[in-house]
Length: 331
Image (tube, rainbow, N blue to C red; front, side):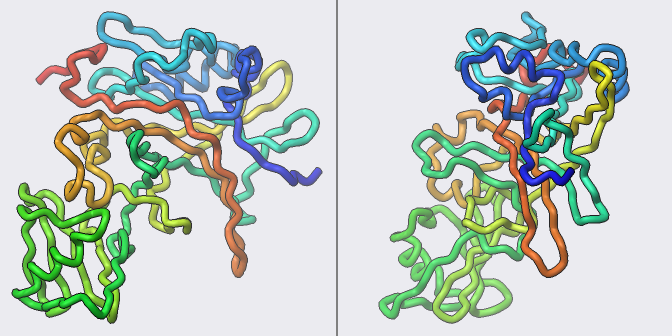
């Protein structure tokens, strides 16, 4: 039977618990699973082979060194209290995102991913925007050739090139949402229509290039990018892989992927050119992240079809030296 409508849900062993909620939010979003050993894949396979319903005991929840815990909570207990924090492997914590990819038809059968037909599954890490920000999510962009944004020049712009371009560049960007601050360093590159901009700490570098009547701003480093209305081809794709098991005599499949919390120092960077405008107070706020699972079918000569899951529960990434971590690493 052909699967016409495909959707993501929480792993099938959690469906009965999720249906007890007043809303369907947890039923239709991927789950975050927490483990205490680096043998988490083998542990998960054994659990699903013996009693799949025990998957509920692995659901991540808020914990500290004084209150180590995991497991499914009622909808009332897991309300908006403290944000969920995920810790480092050095803290003996390992996390998987888990979801079921199903066909919307009677019995809700699992969707088989046929790589020969150009089908693939993966998940992405997204950073949530601040409450006052109009952007809901940022994507982790790895392509330095993709402009972060563009600035259209008008005939009134008196743009000088070469070493004399600093003042005119500041004047042009003063009317933009991302102005160049006075303490940023601007210097000419190898070409007379290109400039390099660095922050005071020399930690981030951006290239501004003039092409006809447009200034293109490129990042020389990987970083967070706003949604542009088009699917960027270089968004970091994290692998999902299937685990097959028997549940009440029925063959089921879930997809799981390892959440890269150890890369927390990279993901803590400010989105795009926010060091130009973000206040010190904003940069001290711990960012929130979420995950989305994606099914994609791409065929030659046709636009790719994607099915994107709802976001997971938002979470913070605990730093290596986090004082509230369940296990303190040896330094």
